[in-house]
Length: 195
Image (cartoon, rainbow, N blue to C red):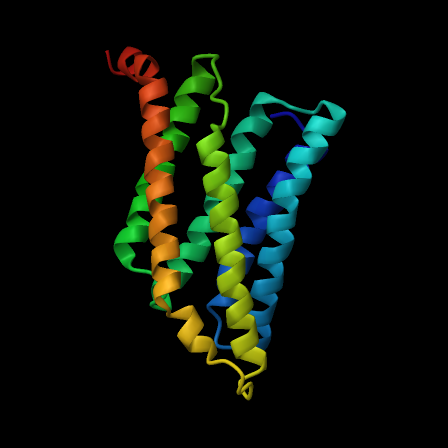
């Protein structure tokens, strides 16, 4: 394990993920607010660690593994929370979970083989879109939690809208597309491991 600033930032995001999950699913309005803020901080660290690694040449194999792992843990905690809130169906979460298990397993195998996997463009786009979507939903939850007397909009109608469903459906398709891309690109690595 290489200890440098980007990896420390990624580790912080990994540690923030369970804090975010516990806070968001609390019955305390204050803790729900904390959860929303913690997610925002964690999402900012995702941009910060990548920028720092490229800016100062701190790109390492461990960092290439840790950064996407922290992203996966954070987003999976958000999605299972959304399932519990009936914002998204369970089967979509299962798709993300299986997809992330496959991609992480591939990364572990690749590192052991001395050929670390580079994050694909489609996976980067998927991660950015899903983080923006999660931030959007958390923003609505924050508004609902703190401004229930707002008459201009019905916040629940936005959280549980068709737009929300189709947005997460599209993100699910993006997740499937990216993992099939990994499987196709690294099929020789998989066959060597199996055989």
